[in-house]
Amino acid sequence: MSSGASARPPAAGGRPAAPVFAVLVVGPSMVPTLRHGDAVLVRRGGRAVRAGDVVVGVFRTRPDLLVVKRAVRQRDGGWELHGDNPLATDDSRVHGVADVLGRVVARYWPRPTWFHRRAG
Image (tube, rainbow, N blue to C red; front, side, top):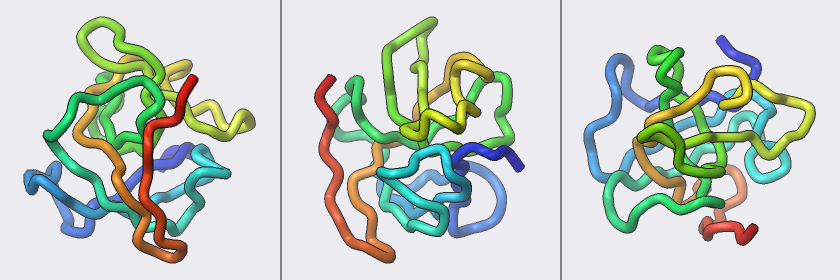
């Protein structure tokens, strides 16, 4: 598994299809926003993804790896995704463009919080 903040859907196999699904954050690339072991709710659909949103996506070069990253900019029909941790660069700088599956809307474990787009 990658050293970046990857995600595990609660059910084994395939990509989640429900409009809201939960994932478990694995790895340090989203520190300080999210930490290894955080559980988040992800919404598929709804408003369009914007730069600054925390999202769950799949790199086109790594379709087997579900990741939690921050959307930076649209590129080549997908999104450039970066981690918040400057010491962990296992993101679009390495893997290229990603397809976004949904936006992280809340962390429900262990420190519940709602997510909003980060300006900038």
